[in-house]
Length: 126
Ligand code: HEC
View 1 (cartoon, protein in one colour):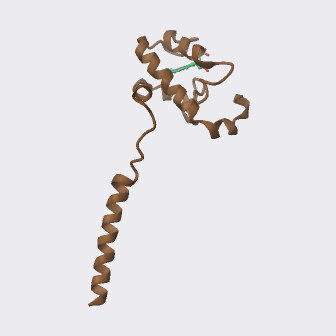
View 2 (tube, helix red, strand yellow):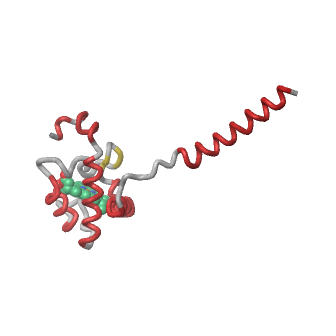
View 3 (cartoon, protein in one colour):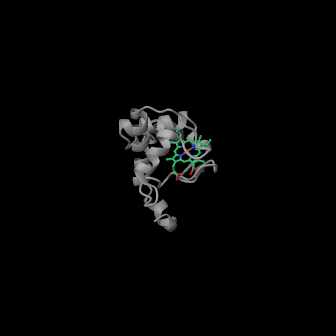
């Protein structure tokens, strides 16, 4: 009799804990504000990742963008020029409006600000 109750208790505890883990416990939320997450959405909607990498993920046709924002040879104005006009022969001009460019820059800034360990690993970016 004792054992049955113990097993029942363990089963219930297991299912309760599992459902918590798979729902609430892994919902960390995001530290991005609205503008930054709008930029992230635009980034993915336009498949920027097919040519660019962020944190090592993405294509190799274009330069990596993790630290483009703070890179002393690139930076905000440089990135903005590419977003406004496209660049070279391979970076397309997406004809973004000012708001979209603003959001994309906010997203790239956010990525850069959160790339602390990435910057340590890639000292050459400094
Ligand atoms: C077809 C491939 C391709 C796609 C898609 C693409 N890019 Fe690019 N991008 C490039 C290439 C290639 C360059 C470098 C051009 C040059 O230096 O002449 C570049 C340059 C840039 C730069 C300047 C950074 C640097 O180091 O030169 C930024 C910022 C950038 N792209 C952002 C984006 C964003 C944001 C998107 C999506 C909206 C995007 N790109 C989509 C190919 C692409």
